Length: 340
Image (cartoon, rainbow, N blue to C red; front, side, top):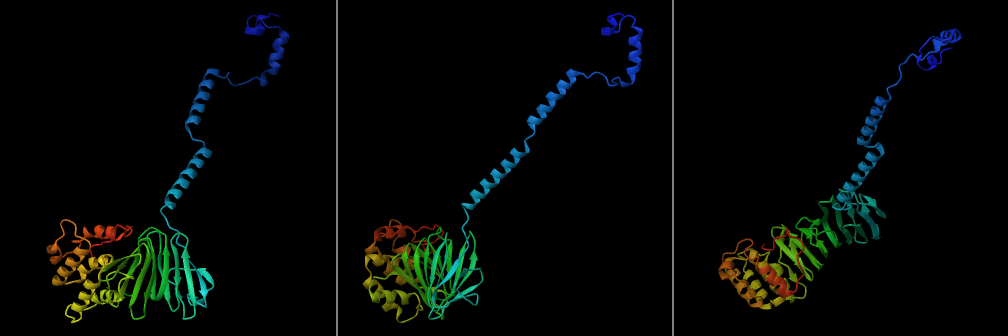
């Protein structure tokens, strides 16, 4: 047998080898020999595509992380809006049922009688003590506003949410928290009063009274408000300040009330005088200017003529001067308009 035939099929094969080839022919590999260079190139391209295509697990983790980050950032700007109520004495009702403890849903009324009291609170807003013979409802609860309705009765609110978020509306006035603690009473006929223990409250009706800690303001039916006055002022001053704003311009008692205010005013009462310009007539504004200028001299640019021709915001520059002279804390809400 030619040995070359076994390697390159050269020469003549041995007859027995030829017979064996013929017998094994049906089992011969019919495919061509693979092109190993081409297979290598294809393998390299496959690995390249895999490296460019993100792994599903990695992509899912990325989506989850982004979602958590968005939720966290958003939650920083939201306020928990759940209000919980509980009875503190007697048998108050919530939504017409006897209250022991429960969630306050918007639109439901919490009612106390003469023998019962209650408390409502939200962990990110504050707490409100509801006095006897009161009717309160949660009108809105959102990250934009927490609005309570006080139909009648009295509440004591301690608020630590951002200034301007917590609001109590009554038939005669709206109290806007500016970072404070206060007591608000409203009678069934619409009369009432606000007393502030800390911070400031903006009391809004047909005018505005910015009431600081240690001061109060009176509320009349029809949304009329007194100027703020300190509770340590003389009783005569407090009564006159409360009545002056509610008198008609032709009332014979108006002149005597203003004279009492001007006579009893201390430097601390400059805040009340500053609030009277919007409630006074031209000749009255000149008298108020003269007294206020004695107690806390007016800044440059504010004169008797400014008082005579008073317009909204014309006394704005006097506000920080009075606040500083009286040692009053800063008003924390920029939306308030101290010139009213």
